[in-house]
Amino acid sequence: MKRGLSEVLAGNAYDPTRLVQILRGMMELEGYISPSVITEIAAALDLPRSAVEGVAGFYSFFETEPRGRYRVHFSDNITDELQGSVELRQRLLDAFHLELGEVSRDGRLSVKLTSCTGMCDQGPAMLVNGRPIARLTPARIGAICSLIRGGSPVDQWPENLFTVDTHLERADRLLSTPIPPGAAIDAALARGAAETLAVVRRSELRGRGGAGFGTGQKWTACAAAPGPDRYVVCNADEGEPGTFKDRVLLMHHADALIEGMTVAGLAIGARKGFIYLRAEYPFLKPTLEATLAARRAAGLLGKDIRGQRGFDFDVDLHMGAGAYVCGEETALLESLEGRRGIPRNRPPYPVTHGYLGRPTVVNNVETLIATAQIALFGDEWFRTLGTPRSAGTRVLSVSGDVARPGIYEYPFGVTVSQVLADAGAERTQAVQVSGPSGTLLARKEFGRRIAFEDVPSAGAFMVFDESRDMVRVVDNFARFFAHESCGFCTPCRVGTTLVKQMMGHLVAGQGSRRHLKDLARVSKVMKQTSQCGLGGTAGNPILDGLEKFEPAFYGRLPSLEVRPVFDLDASLAPAREATGRDDAGAHLDPERG
Ligand SMILES: Cc1cc2nc3c(=O)[nH]c(=O)nc-3n(C[C@H](O)[C@H](O)[C@H](O)COP(=O)(O)O)c2cc1C
Ligand code: SF4
Image (cartoon, rainbow, N blue to C red; front, side, top):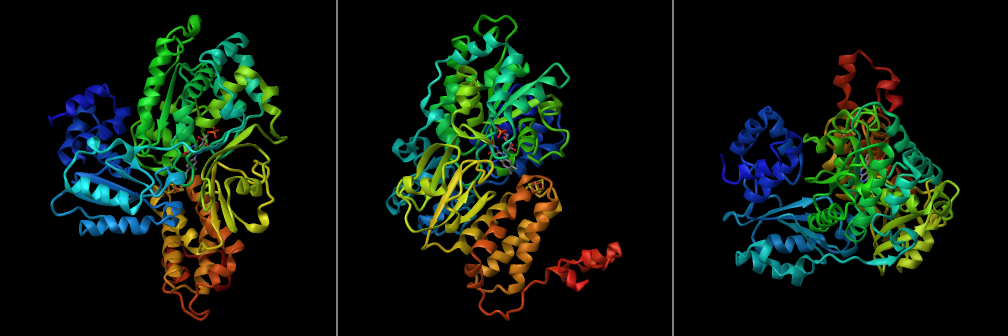
């Protein structure tokens, strides 16, 4: 067996559900996953070779061919782009006479793009062998080039290169109310599981991961589902470009998070939990592991927690491997079970058929911290902040054209203009709330409020001033979705690629009115027919951009008479022929039916 592989397999108990962790282990050892390693892993885990190969090929941080000894992933996020990431990347490539995607001839360096590193408040950023380096400047790139030329191992590079800053700019209740370890668990134990569920329901806490589903309802449905085993999963995947608040919560509030997971375990009757941590945050692993160990030692995890006989609960840490779609809860569960992160058909929902087909609650980091506070201070306390339909506070990740990027916590209901003023934004033309999948707001909408009933937010708040080209911004989002689509369903796989191509034509000055029309049509089709939320939201920036920044889009057309280079409707003719349909509904443009 390949050197090191048996240790990696043993370290993961030869457990097929830990396949993603096993492949991560081999990436760390060898820098890529060779065909022979795939064969050996398949044999050792008693899996078909194709299953292991499929997983190795799915995640963008897994390589199945040799890459450079230094593997660089440059962030392609728009806020990094605004701060000069493209020029810095080119500087690195030029220094080694390399093209993007290539491996240098001496096998030393390879450079690729990654969608976002979660460092939007301190970009431009990149990852070297998985470790983030933020605040890139020409001088930092120069220093990195010297280290690579000198052959210095990455773990011997100066530690200050890898420092990740916190940038906490505004704390409200969630960030400023400490929970003494065990206090929320004690309060939940005193109330009992049923009353804890009732308190979380009465708090009207809604999930902070995006969809805003009622946490109390979710937990109650899970508790009521039949079956002996239940699970609590913390979604710490944080893949949405522009979002980095979970990074800060995990760094500074890990205890409260695990307290919240333990309260969830008590409330739904689970004995096991998982934290699914974004691959870009390996520097958080030691903090989380130390917190878990300290809590085990203090009797806050493990058997008979707080001396309560039969109350057993523990938490495993599971790292992702670079796939935005794995933030979608069913894709996340697939990944946790050691498979490719393809979203499942729903229903059934995870509350009845989740991890290993058992009832499971999946919650965002911020949601779970809020549940610990609710368990300790009660539902009324929680509801005193926010709006009638959005209780509590929202932690925002503010980035882009602002004087003070960072973390800002507000009670729900804060206006967009208030956040802009606090962050020192000037001459702002647009704000992208909730990342590319969210809402693009134009200046006349800055009086709107961050709340589920007005502008919902999964935490990202990206600011663009008047100097920015909004077509380029939307083009960046289009590339993001095309890169991250898992390819499982046709509307998203084909739609995101078409949108990326059409946006590319527009940016290159080869667009036409027809492109604009087709962009809107394809975006709507994706919204209506995609399997999961990725495809369902991939058209949002296009539709918002066309509606709110129409002059910028029309301004990119070289001539209003230019013919499109690709006729989408005509390209669907074979499909119409195969189905024997040629009516209006079978055309993208009903007038052509
Ligand atoms: C493409 C996609 C990516 C997502 N990424 C995340 C994520 O990174 N973190 C998260 O908490 N929720 C994410 N979600 C939402 C989850 O599917 C799920 O709704 C959430 O984890 C539930 O937790 P909550 O109820 O606490 O919000 C994503 C959804 C989609 C469709
Ligand atoms: S919508 Fe996109 S990401 Fe979701 S299942 Fe379909 S192809 Fe995959």
